[in-house]
Image 1 (cartoon, rainbow, N blue to C red):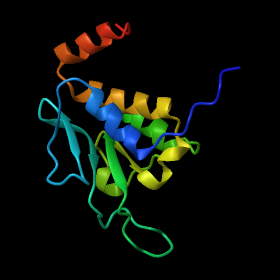
Image 2: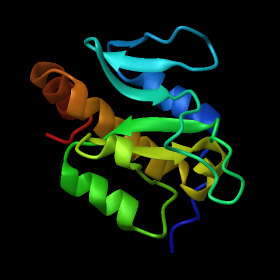
Image 3: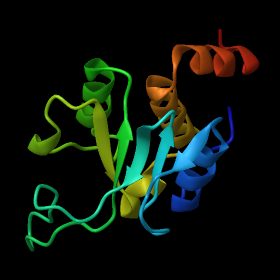
Length: 140
């Protein structure tokens, strides 16, 4: 039996995103980075918005991260799986991304989080960059 993977952390979001090739941070502050590849966002730390709020208190969540996904099927698989902390809101209907609160990131293993972020990068990188990365990692 494989050992249990350690829980993911917020630092893992930054570490994995920054480790991908050709990544820049287009965020306007250090506490809300916007990780991009080729000028396209793939992970960003969102400011509190009215569409993501605590159902009991009505307070806006201040710890939401947006992560792109390759397809609507991938999005549905993540948000409909009650075993994951991913969710969406009506604001993101038709948008190929999922949301996750940093306060719940530990419900994922570091490996699971890395896979989601790598898929996000792959979905936004140019075909040449994506193919190069896949080949370098023995996935192509």
